[in-house]
Length: 133
Image 1 (cartoon, one colour):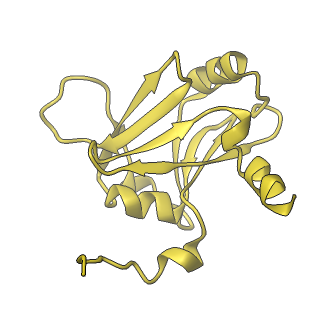
Image 2: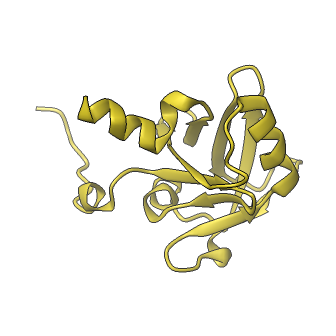
């Protein structure tokens, strides 16, 4: 039998959610947990796939990092990235400026990062609608 590593709080926590709004990028408790509650993170962007890659900052890379766990409030962490979020709204065609939108993230074990595809298929509400059909 394979070795399993069950997380018994995962189901109750729901899904790893990343919220995009006019204020920036917000991470729910489960997404923070999947990242390992790092002090700072790196956020990468794949423009062709309109996807974010979020990983704990390792400390040896030379690029902009974002303070993370020290910004926790009510279980959530928000990163201010107004200009970038405005660009994402234009690029994706999804209006998360006038009303925040939530996206379900997936965890890439090989690269130790959360992947968030910014399209209508990965919207939290879209997933709910597909399940109801």
